[in-house]
Length: 77
Image (cartoon, rainbow, N blue to C red; front, top):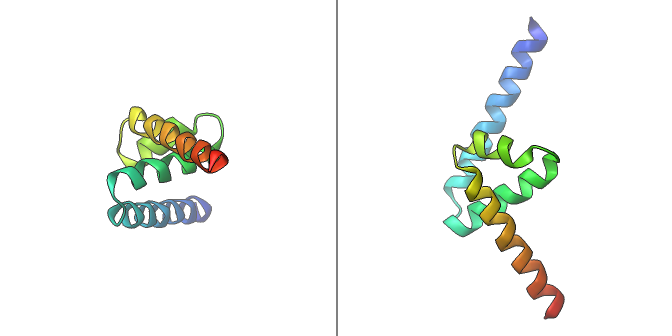
């Protein structure tokens, strides 16, 4: 029971940190940040991050496209 409570507290802290981070970013930055987070979670990351952040999967996917464009620009630059 104590382990479950500790896990719930940790999840709440992470969600609060995510909310704070997203609140100071503009829309494009939010999409890219969420895409990076979803990559770090591996398979199913897009859905998990979208659910945690309260956005659609399409928002995270759009962030992935923008992130790829940035990587392409950096490699050509």
